[in-house]
Structures are given as C-alpha cells and as structure tokens.
Length: 131
Image (cartoon, rainbow, N blue to C red):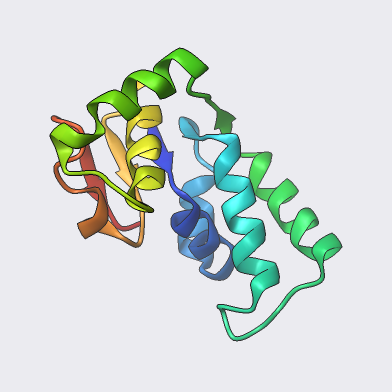
C-alpha cells in the first residue's frame, strides 16, 4: 500500500518520531513541489522557529531518502486545471488539488496531511488521513 505525503505531513515527520518511522517504511511518495513547501515552512518562521536555508535543505534531504518522487506532467496539470471547477477548486486550494491528483495518478489510495478537511472530496476514492 502506497502513501502519498503532502508537505504538512512531511513537516510533521521532522518533529514526531512515530510519524518519521512511518515515513521510513516502504511505499511512501510525494512530489517535488512538496519539498519547496516544506522549505518555505521551515525557513519562513511559521513554526515559531526559523531555520537557516542550509539547515532546511539538509532536513529535506533526509526526508527525501525515504520517498519516491512522483510528478504530474504538464498535460496532466492542464487537465487538472480544466477540471478544478468541478471540484470547487479555486485560489490557493489548487495546490492541494494537485497533490491529490499526484497521489491518484501515482496509484496511491491514501494521502497523508495535517489538513484533512482541505483534501476531502477532491479525488473520488482517495482516502485522506492525518499521519
């Protein structure tokens, strides 16, 4: 069973050993964009602490070791943008939608996030859980 991790779940893995152990198991995936979101969180100070960019990059590199990276092609992205209105997606929610699309296209049936409400109903059959 493969699990798709959004950026919030990856940040949680940096701070919770139980979640980090789950990430270390086989079958975990994310997309490259998640790493930029994690970097933004770690260096932007929203956690109450601001990491230096080099420190954040090292933390992300350690996460990368346990993840398969999947991508959404340009054509798949354009198709998702065309179908976004059917799911009520607009504005910043497009980022969540593209994570859900990536999870679905990669064959994952489960997406892990701290924002479970934001992902509900985006992709039929995609289960959304907190890590």
